[in-house]
Image (cartoon, rainbow, N blue to C red; front, side):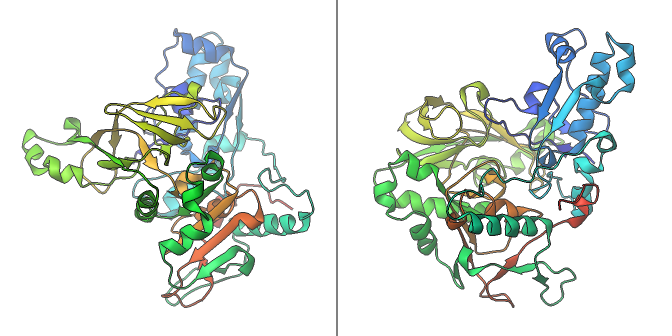
Length: 433
């Protein structure tokens, strides 16, 4: 089994993938593409501390790849380093095991848990430090009691300690009741209802960076996020510009040239695969978009950066950054070639398109790392993976800013939604008292 490594750049940082030249496809014996006598190897030998953020999101193979590489590189000048973890360098891993775990293609629950860093041989050499203070919802101010209750409820949700029920023919109790103070609506939902609450006075606020930066609608599925984004794009004034992608099958991913005829361009254009922009990308001046790839991390153009479109040119898109340390900076976004190894198709799709996606709404997984004042969790269907509900609820900076919209018309329990927690992933972690 092999895995595709996923990385997201942080503010003023570098992705582990780019910094250590970690291969995209990870195998059990992979190493980083770093030569012992290169400048990067020398830099790593001189390094005293490596900080790896959001570690639980990354596959344990990525850490083991770096461990093997660091031992090899450092022992080039210090033979004793070959027997030391990471060649004797200090590595600080940060993150939250309550959040979404590593992506394993076609993996089942046990595969995802086993992919966690806590299941690696490296974990035995780690010293665990527990951080207990919420940095998003800080317990200060006149409403500190409400904030304390919210943080306790959030941690109990992430740990799977809330009272839960099971529907018929289910073995595990995963359905939890959402407190009324965080629930905006239950029953049959429509998009307008959700948009009106999270984006009040939308037309007036649609040109305000702060208004757009501080709110978003989160949902489990890409299809739902696309539907919300299409609806909201139609609401703002102005004409949109349509950018069509150039799609082709990667020749290395098929057995013969004859297979090319089996995948005509018209078919490739219809595919909406994970991590890729649409074939037809509709953009309007003033709409918020999210960057889907790292283009220039030093300039703030990282995977997950949100921007406002300021000009839709013929061959370039101009935008203004609204998140991170480069807020207000105007940048140019080019078309690039993006590839997808989505298991839904038996080939690698190469799509040349702007790496952008409208982000009035975004998937819960894509929202990791975002901080928002107003969060609408739109659940026409429940979450389907570990940590998704916790991630969605923990994006808010105030308890009053969280609203869940639950479609429970086909459920046994009204006002309940699914909360999936793989409790076994916490077995190698100390208990927070």
